[in-house]
Length: 192
Image 1 (tube, helix red, strand yellow):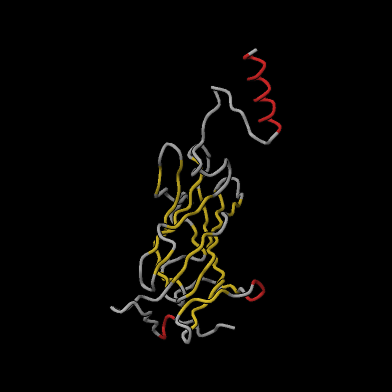
Image 2 (cartoon, helix red, strand yellow; image 1 turned 135 degrees about the horizontal axis):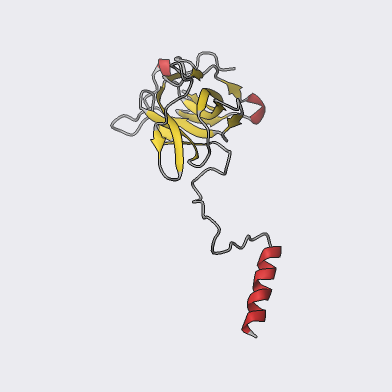
C-alpha cells in the first residue's frame, strides 16, 4: 500500500511541473548559471556617485570555454528629480540607453573589452569548483536607476551569450540631517 501512495505522489508531482531527480543526478546550486548561460551580479545594488561597484559575470565551471570579448550596455529607467529630491521612474517608452556607458556615466566600466595578449584569452578573475568568471570594478558618476547588460564572446566558437540585466540604483549621498546632496555633475544633462 505504501508503494502505491508514493507512486501516486510522484506521478502527481511530475504532472505539476515538479522535476524528480534520481539519487545519481548532479545537483547544481540555484545561484549557478544554467549550462551555456551567463549570469551577472553586482556586489551592491544601491550606490552613490563615486562608490566602487563590482560587476561579476559567471559561467559554469564545467563550460569548456574561454572569453575573447566582453561588452556592456546600460539603459536608464529612472532619473533624479532635483526639485522632488528623489529618483523618479521613467515610463517604459521613455527608457533610454546611456551608451556607450562611458566615463560620463560609469567610470571604468568597459563598453567593449577585447582580450589582450597573443593567446586571445581573458584570464578568469573568479574560479571555483562551480563557476568561473570575470569581474569589473567601476564607479557610477550620474544619479539614476540603470539596467546594465553584459555580453561575452567565446574564443574558439565565437558564440555570444548575453546575461539578463542587473539593476543598479545610484542615489545621492545624504547630509547629516538625512537630506539628499545632489551635485550638478551627478545629474544627466542629456535627459530627454
